[in-house]
Length: 293
Image (cartoon, rainbow, N blue to C red; front, side):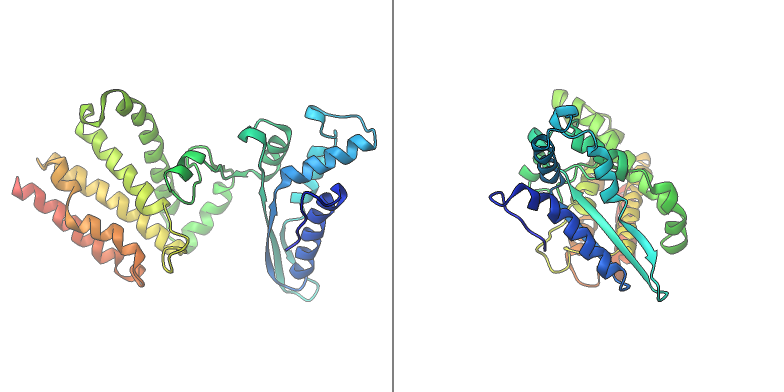
């Protein structure tokens, strides 16, 4: 940990970022995989601005030096995977926390960072107030690397992994559009298929996206389990649509016990081994709601 406080010289704030990345490269060259968290690059940029003004350099946008974007780029470009001189693999992964004043990501540091990294996790104060953690806004966040990674996911996780990811993301987008109508007229005014979409999206938020970092099991989720959980949600949606087409009521489908068991099961050790059997039980119970009606 490389730390500096606000009462230390401004040059220390700038130097600490370079100290951290240099130490990370040292361990990378030894064949380790290193993760570096720079918190926050906004304070680093402010130190750079203060030093620049004392040197009487020509200021750029919002008083930051004209070379701000190139300095940010030079920092992030030091991340990556290498083959060391003795033939080992080493890597440095850089995560930069940007904390712009007032949460305005249109300011120069945020924009300069986004142009370089091509990945954005947008923290949301509203989600934090709702105790939804991690409080990452799924509509504002994005990655420009899926096409580069899709083949790896197909080879190592499942052939339909990219399609499942796209479906889950699409459902959250549809929910966001429906919420505007719900706030005006209430969910009961929606058609049953759209009410089902809201239920599936709630499942994605509470069962798939939300995690308890203090729980021994739920604090970590294997990528294979993530895929199975996403497939479970889509299996529920497909089974529910079929049942409702056969005459089942939405409330009967949504309130089946096995659905609650499936959502609670993620807190249990060995969940990855039983999730498929739980999905089969859920599908059977949903199909039974048609016979009941």
